[in-house]
Structures are given as structure tokens and as C-alpha cells.
Image (cartoon, rainbow, N blue to C red; front, side):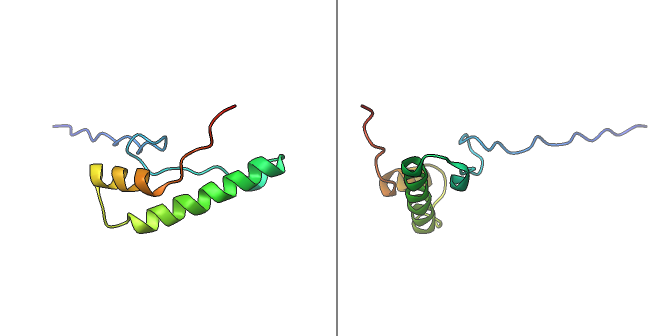
Length: 74
């Protein structure tokens, strides 16, 4: 008798249920974009700390409520 084991797929890293992968701000050439990137990282880390005890829909709502709104496009 032969038993076959399947390797589970890797968790997604694109915002669809998996851990978020942040951009490397240090690689940005434009100083304004780099500053905005660093500000967003600080806000993301603060929101993650504040929402660490929540899960599922409650976690998503907590993160949305604790992240600053993106600037309007011109």
C-alpha cells in the first residue's frame, strides 16, 4: 500500500488572508514618497499593536478604523 502526502500551499502574502508584506521604504528614490511610506509603516504598526487581540472580521474592522485615510488623488 502506498500513502501519498500533499504539501499544503504557502499562505498568501497579498492581503487575502495572509500576513501583510510591507514595502522597503529605504529603496525609494523620491524623498516625499519615502516619508509617506515611513509614516504609513508607523501607522500600520500602531494599528497592528492596537488590534492584536482581535480576529477575523473584528480585526479587519479594527485595522480599517485605526489606519489613516489615504490622501486624495489629484
